[in-house]
Length: 597
Figure 1: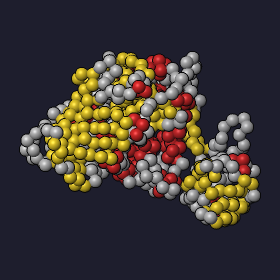
Figure 2: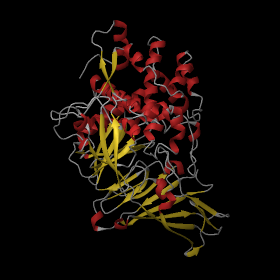
Figure 3: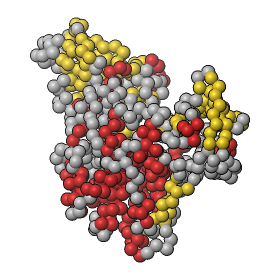
Figure 4: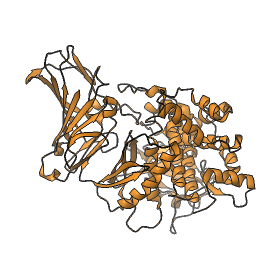
């Protein structure tokens, strides 16, 4: 048995004290910290947060030798070994560890080194109460199995092995909690942070969403309970999936207010986040690529299939909100258009395929540069576009006999419920063929390995949905008119200075010699005061020259820019009112009842 003890003795210094107890073994003891956390494909090198380490046996200090950036060695001995680590935790994200005088949160990857050769054994953690006056209202929330825990959750928890140990994040704070049951499975909704949201409303809506997803894959659910661990902040957004829980960060205004009617855009965003992470309970936590079976936590685990696991999840997160009755068809089409626009707005979609984006995730997706929009595309959004294309074409080719739903359920049957190993890199085409009886190899190649835009508009037209492109500007009565030109830059306001964050390839700005990190001062002698240029360019026409004034380093520069028409426009999706009967039937089979709400 491997046992860890977590002591929250120094919240205001953001230090976790972790002790690792290893029973006697005849050989040296090697321990290593993970380099990354499953679900987030970047080497984060968690060992760098270890600020101190020591070891002892029977009260006597033991020499502990650091072998590399994340591995330590202790000599063999007759008694039990105890290793103590001090870990700095101040990462306010779903991927890290955080501790201050208001809250503690951690993932096992951040605090718990694994013992070489012992990862398959049961592991326990003991979470001690801080014993500090300002922490007296803190409670523990985690999906890990409790062995002996008090009314506030402090005590001992157990996991079957190291892989499970690090798959149960822990929230410790004065959080609010709502419990509910979905498809017979107990669910816990936990929200930390200041907010005025209606958690009962959220829990009620989550019942519909969770039951819809469980029924999508088929009962019984693969978990015996599930925890949504949420943190409400000013403007945060993100999530990370786990086998029986998810970590969520969202804006406090994303929560519904008491008595608030309907589903606002902010609340819709939160429901989409919950839907995305919950869908991962099946897709990636249990249905995995071969590259993740098992995880190797000390190095990159390359796969070309993230477009499938993240892209399909992105596609279904909103489609299942529609099927759950939480949003209507009009709202769904708006969300689908937003997903497509994340592809169309990136010039890099024509430079990187979905498979290439997946493989390059470790070195590019989480390390953006000013040139990222020109050089690559997200496997989330391009993968969702691939999922849409597959779904529509399966329905068309098989005359409605099959859909992508059937393919995903087959993935679950073969690689999830049956636990028959991971999906091979080239295995998805075989699954498509087995389910549909058709060869979708050329389409799969077009959607995932080629870089050109697929004919999405043509496919949607056969379902009575019109895709059109139009230039969209800021909303509101006082918003300036949508300009007929653009500079082709992304701006950010940094301490009152308007800076160029990114310059799109082939744009007006690039041709004129504007560069990332330039400070944008004026256009035609008029001061630029915000990241919105619509007002300054409202009356300009393509081919017109303007003078751009900027600074680069400590130099004042002026550039003549010949304005271009927008090269990237936004798509919108609308139902075709007088569509033919066949298209109407296909649309109804895909989106459900033909209602616009």
